[in-house]
Image 1 (cartoon, each protein chain N blue to C red):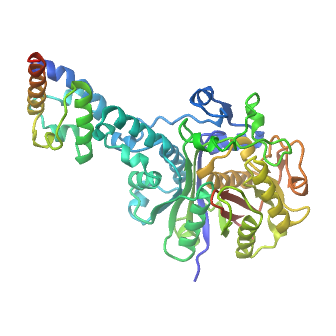
Image 2 (cartoon, helix red, strand yellow):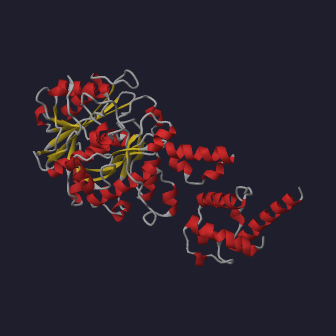
Amino acid sequence: MLNRVVITGIGIYSCIGKNLAETTQSLYRGKSGIIMDAERKEYGYRSGLTGFVDNPNLKGVLDRRSRIMLPEQGEFAFMSTDEALKVAGIDQDFIDKSSVGILFGNDSSAQAVISANDIIREKRDTVMVGSGSVFQTMNSTVTMNLATIFRLKGINFTVSAACSSGSHSIGLGYMFIKHGYQDCIICGGAQEINLYSMGNFDALGAFSIREDAPHKASRPFDRDRDGLVPSGGAATVILESLDHALRRGATILGEVIGYGFSSNGAHISNPTVEGPQKALEMAIKQSGLGVNQIDYINAHATSTPAGDTSEAKAIFNVFGQPGPYVSSTKSMTGHECWMAGASEIVYSMLMMQNGFIAPNINFENPDEDSVKLNILAETKEAKIDCFLSNSFGFGGTNSSLIIKKWGNK
Amino acid sequence: MTQIEIAEKIIPFLVEEFEIERELINPEANLRDTLQLDSLDYVDLVVVIESNFGFKVKQGDFQNLATFKDFYTYVQGKVNASDEASNNL
């Protein structure tokens, strides 16, 4: 028998809020987390725009050994996971007595790699990087560190799937639990935000250069968009089997009812319509819902002309008109890349819990494709019973998740 | 350098790097237990010493040192050997 899979905890550390309460306020107010970083220009970036969040001070929170092994995105992920576990009511004693797993999306650790090699080049002595470096540099740094810090004993690996990493981590967690291999998994996504993390992405000319108006720069679906704004942080989603959650008396926040995925089988960076459409249709079919039962779509839309257009076409092909409400929270956060698939589940969960849909800020003029969607440029008070979140990445990796409010038939 | 001078230079680095109370460090105390060193921490001990004294530490040198006094003696030997080599140039 297949298990039902529920969400019992969420946590966030992002450029629009360092916790759930701050983030809810920002989403409701349509607050942008984008800044202009002059240091990037000096370093050689074409665009100095970025989302920004401070690094947390974990001295006194984690011991020295734990701290020196954590890169920036690991620190972010610790913060969001600590919050999510508290929301879920899962403490260390419970973790020690059970088999909690972790699946987190992460696809780089550039700062740690560059810093280590700068030291080796200068000193001509590898030992001078210290003992923490190797654990900071690997792609699996987030899962290896959090599994150690929280003493996790279940499934433990990192999902690297470009900008759909976070979404696939939740999708895979859903499948592990649905098929009975795990009862509880910490899922999520983390994204470094430092100077070194995005230089080669900037090289592709895909970033907005609207540097005179950082808050206006990320404008998914808008006719006058000129590219995405990189960003980062971390988001955590605690998944459990329904039986497990009920057994321990957890508050259930939502239910995962669909995970669709596909690969474009085409260009490494140019999007297609067919790939995302296939993932959307797979998720909807799995959910057992009709398209008119999806109240809200948190679009992947990053503010690039080609990406937004292909997603708009895919959504229109599947949902028709008027279709569900659509917004891209990347209009406020920028593109949180490896983290985005997880953070956008958290953002949408906050909307569902608080009865509103966050705006797609800067959506001033539609283009010929986005005009066919029901895009909200302003915050709307609305009851969401069910939402869908899209995430697409380089290499043509696509993921769509559908979440239903708990307590609804 | 005298052993006291070595200790005065080392102790602040150890307190900073390994986040322990200054009062726990005395010549007869056990190095590994006091600093709570595991195999990874010895790498960081090498980094601290090489960065602050400028000589190369061989992997494994520190594992045979029991007390802080042994540690100061080891560092003093290396520093003085290095000074002598410089004087002979």
